[in-house]
Image (cartoon, rainbow, N blue to C red):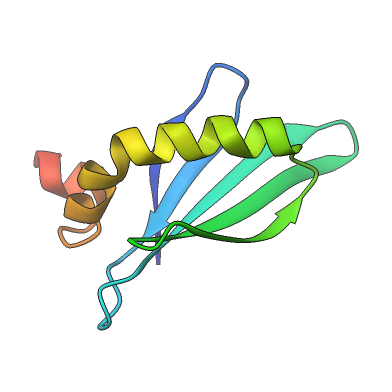
Length: 89
């Protein structure tokens, strides 16, 4: 299951999985562009990037900074059914 986390001003969406038994969390990035989407996956807590399609190296550096700034929240929400459940909505 993937939980929506954040949409950036450029319409890049960030979603995350539940925490896996090994403590890892999949974070998925997707940005709509003409003809499709850019996408990428990063695994927490190791910050291992994979499946990067369309995003430039500068884009990934920016997304990595956002992820580092938000990882503690994403890791917490991944154990509580996403932001909506954690916030009690």
